Length: 236
Length: 291
Ligand SMILES: Nc1ncnc2c1ncn2[C@@H]1O[C@H](COP(=O)(O)OP(=O)(O)O)[C@@H](O)[C@H]1O
Ligand SMILES: [Mg+2]
Image (spheres, each protein chain N blue to C red):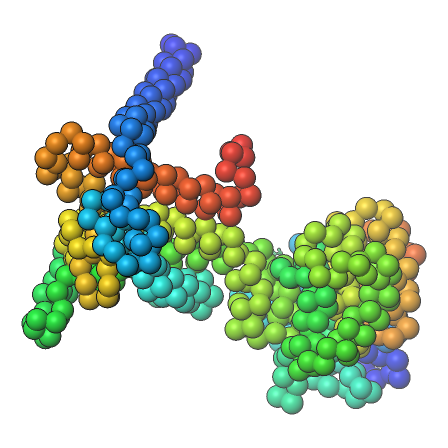
């Protein structure tokens, strides 16, 4: 496969298995930059697992085995995510992830947003505050939480929590955003809000969206893949 | 036939529950009834002015103050020793130990949790004897050795409650910090421990509840009938449960026995308060309906 200008994520003969069970077999694909790539398919086929391959989070879960290469085009250069020059903490700062169920950390709203910055060694209070505001603004949450940034993030509603998690993932300006059924625990209104947000966000990064809502996919996805029988089939 | 058996089972279960409930009610009733009349103004401080006693300006000879102070000091010391060790071991078992080593250690702590406290007391006594040989005349049965033995007694509960709390953190939350680039230690410190703080606090309070009423350990390792407020870690001391044990065997007149009941009431109240606090911390509401 040749390197195209607008590729962002590439796999070369990627295989993944949990124990005896082969979930992904010899997959070679390329996902575009500044686009939403949707991955759909029956449950249990390995969609979530595929996402965790891109930020190497599967290594924290244990029991999995990976073969093949995965490359990301970070700062304009294709880089092997398993290369020694790419520490896993660095990779995960460039690749944001939002999970199916909202997962606010057990701390205040502002501490949730500051957390990734502090991990990256950014301690300056003013910078943290400014970037938190910017991220909250981008997910359209600022006006709702502005006056209670110090309160426990777990007290927010489900939709608010999910937008906070998205804001937290955006704090370090990731180049890739992995979203695992991000709207499945939300009501229709919050769901529409997130979808509009993703259309805005794709201008600045590559989004991989696992979803099994066909209407959602047809509304916002630029590329669509079906995961079934260990392979990814391009649908659109 | 089957239906009759079913009815019989239900009736028997109901009767057993009722009997148990009545027994508990009777037991608490006796203590409250006998102890209540002993709750006189002089019960705690005797003839000494409370302020003088609290500031340790004057000794209390005929009140429960030294026993309460001894019990409090003992609990503070026990928990200072047990909580850090319990936390560290619980974290190790939940987050680092794997496979056979983990299974073996878990089994070990389950066995330790079932150790009778008289056995732990004997171990404490053996330790005292050894220390006494090494430092003749300087170390005997004392507050520090009791606290060590009690810490050992409650350690398995602490370890297991910390371990269980950590292991029950949902996977998504567990993966949150690593997905943002955090290493394992940061994840434990900033996410996992805060997330299960209520359960851990509940476990600590239950451990205090277990330690505070224990008599077997302390009577072998340093508690005595009369010592005043403990002045040093190497001093003997008085304690509420030991006072109850002692007075019920040695009382000279009915009034003294009544003081024993009053002490029991105090101890019971402390335990109930702590149990409720533990429930409140770990479930939010102690009277919440159970599934
Ligand atoms: N840690 C694990 N160990 C073993 N099997 C796993 C593990 N995690 C997931 N699986 C299995 O891998 C399969 C794919 O899971 P997942 O990626 O969550 O599927 P999807 O997101 O498509 O529903 C499932 O059958 C699941 O049971
Ligand atoms: Mg999934």
